[in-house]
Amino acid sequence: SNLGPGSAFGGTGGAGGNSADGHGGNGGGGGAATNAGTGDAFGGAGGSAGTGATGGGNGGNGGTATNNGTGNASGGTGADGAAGGTTGTGGGGGAGGNAFVLNSAATGTATGGHGGAGGAGGAGGGNGGG
Image (cartoon, rainbow, N blue to C red; front, side, top):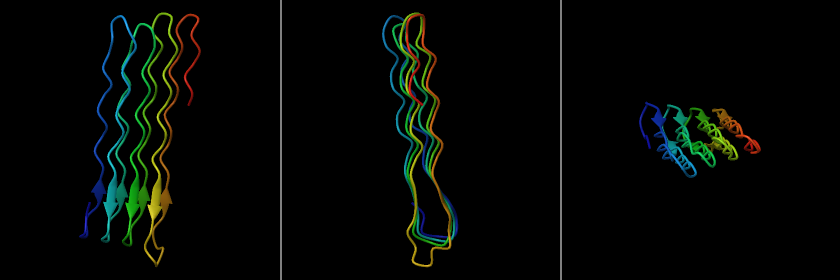
């Protein structure tokens, strides 16, 4: 959170673990950012998805950005899903982060984050959702 003239940046979500013989782990969500001053708020990016032989992990969701001041809010970017390995299903892409501008003057712009792409499926596995 930021109360002064600078910007607030949410942290990047943690990476999902990789698996040599199982399913990849999901990426963690990006951190939220709140700004009540004159700067902007940027939600953190979603964490990367882990790879796995039997299925790819889902990408982390982008973090939420909230601006109560005069600046802009930009939601974090969702991470791509991991490929499905040899036979598994690709992981789903993370959702883009929400953005809110709540100041009464409404001088800022709220821009939602981009969602991540679905991971490619392995042989016999479908693609993950975007």
